[in-house]
Image 1 (cartoon, rainbow, N blue to C red):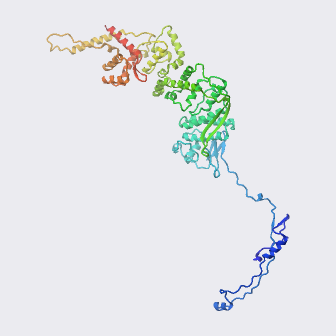
Image 2: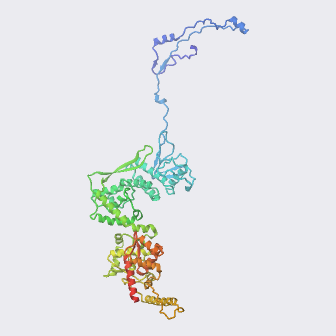
Amino acid sequence: MLDQVARQPASDSLPDGPVVSAQGAGTSEKAAASELAAPSAVPAECEDTVRLDEFDRLFGAKAPQVELTHSVPDAPVHVEQIAARTSAQEFSLPKPPAPERPRWYGPTHTVEVRGLVLPGLLSVALKPPPKGVVLHPATVAAWMPADLGVPTDGVEPIRDVWSIPSYASLTVAQRGLYLKWLASGRELSVPAHLALLFVCGLESRVVEAGPTALADEERRAIAWASRDVVARFGSALPQLREHCLNLAGFLDAVDAPARWYLLDVPELAETYDPSAPLQVALGQAARDGAFLPPAWALASVLSDVRVPKKTPVGRCPEEMRELFCIHFQSAFPKGLKVERRPFNALKVVYRGTPDRRTGAPASTSVVVPSADQTWFTQDQVQAIREAFDRCADELSAYSRFIGRMPIAKGTPDAEVRLPLSLLRRRLAANFEVLSASLGRRKEVSLDQAWMALWGKLPERKDSTSFLRALLEAEGLTVVATLPVSTQRAGVPSPPGRPFRLDPERLERVRKDEAAATKLLSALFTDTAEQATPASPATVHVDPDRALFPQLDDDHFRLLISLLNADAWTRERLKQAASQLGLMLDGALEVINDAAFELTGGPLVVDNGDLGVDSATARQIGGALVSFRQALR
C-alpha cells in the first residue's frame, strides 16, 4: 500500500555535496503519476459470492455492515541516489594477519619447546602452517604432541630404516626422545635415524639460504655439528656418515685454505663423485704446479665407492698409509703432478637429500677461485690403484694375525709379520744399532735380533720364521742359539755361537742307553728253557730320540717324515698324521715346540698353506748327524 511507504521530503535528504537524481525533473512527475493506480471498481458477483440475506439464513446472525470507501492515492515518492562521500576502502574488512612461518634458530639462539630449552641450528614452527603449506621434514612442529616421560630404552625403534624420517611421522615417544636429545646438546644416546633427521635440517639451511649467504660463524657451526655427529655415531648408519662428511667438506670448500694439498687430508666419505676437499686440493696443486703428496692420492682411492676395498684396508689403516707412501714413491719416482687444464675456476656442487615437498634433489654450488677444474689422467689413476692393491696384498698376513688376536697389535709377534719394506722403514734405527754391534761379522742369533730390534722376545714360536726372512733379506746369517728355556731363565747366549752338543747331556744319554739295554736284555732272556747260555738279546734304541726327549715314538716318526720329504701340503700332512693315529694340529704344535727348543724356530710354518721351514730343517738335520757321530 502506498500509505505504508515512508515519505522523505526532498528538503531533508539533500546532502552538502552534489546530488545526482535518478531521472530528470519532467520525467519524474510523469513516472510518479503513471505509477499511481486508479481506484479499482467493485468486483462483480460470482457464484461463490454470499449475499447478505443468505448470510443471515445460513449463520443465523445478521451480517455486519461494512462501509466500503476508496482510499485517496498518496503523493508520488521522490527517489534520488546520493553520491558516496567516503571511499570503498574504508568500508572493506581488515586482512587477516600473515601466518607465522617456521623460524631458523642460529648457533647463538635457543628456543623452548615442550618445556625444554633447545640450542640453535634447527628450524622450529611454533604454530600450524596455513592450509596448503607443507613443512620441511626436519622442522620441529612445536604444536604436535610429544611424550617426554618415556625412557630411552622404552622408545620403539624406527621401522622404516631405508628412508629419512620426518618429525611428523615420528610417534609421540620418538618425538619426546628427539627433543630430549636436542636439549642435551646431542649427547643422549638415540637411534642414528634421529641424528639423520637433524643433519637433514642443517642441509636444508645450507641449500635454501645458500652457502655464501650464511655468516662465517654459522657456516663453521654447521660444519662442526656435522662432524660431531660422525664422531658420536661412527658407522652405525652409512648414509648418516655420508651426509655429514659431504656437508662438512662442502662448507670447508667455501672457505678453502690456501695450498690445501699441503695440509692433512680430512675424513672423506665414499661417493661416486670426488668429494669437495679432494677437488679443491687437486685443483690448487694443478694451478700451483706442485707435486701432490701421496696422502691425497690415497684419499682419491679410499673415497671412491667403485674401488673394492680388501680387509687389510679397513683393519690396518695406519700400516696401509705407511706402505702406500713407499709404493707411491716407487710408482712416481719423480713425483705426481696433476695436469692443469685451460683456466677454468673450480665449481663445487653439493647434492643432498631430495626434498619431499618438491621431489627435487637439494643442491647448491660454490665457485673456488683458487683452484682449477681438473683431475688425474687415466694412466695416473691406474698406477695409483695398482699401488693400492699391492699394499693390501702385502698386509694380508699381518691383517689375519691382528684379526685373530687384536690385543697383539704393537707386539713383536704382530709387527714381525709386516711387509719387509715397511719393517725396514720402521726399524731403520734399530738395524743400525744391530749392525754396529755385529761389526764385520754378518752372523746373528735370533734372540740377539729380537732384543736388538724390539727389546724383548716373542710370545709365539711361529714368529721366528718371519724374523729369519727379515734378517736374510738384510744380508745377515742366522745362527742357532741355546735352548730358549735356558735363555729365558737368565743364561744369555753368546752372539753368533754355532750349534754345539752339550757334553754332560751326551754322557747322560749314553748311560741311559746302557741301562735300558741291560734292563731289556734281562727281560727277554729265558734261562729256564735254554740248555746252553745264550748271548744277551740286543735291543736297538734309536739314539736320535735323545735330542727330542719330549716326543713319543709317533711324534718322532712324523718329525723324521717331515725332514725327509721335499715338499708338503696340508693334505699330505694330514694323511701322514692320521696313519700314525695323530691329530694334525696337535701333532704340529708338539713338534714345533720341540724344534723351537732346539733351534729357536718352528719346523712347520703357516704362510697361507702349511710348509716345512727349510732353515730349521737343515739345523735339525745337522744336529742329528753331529749327535750320531758323537755317539760313535
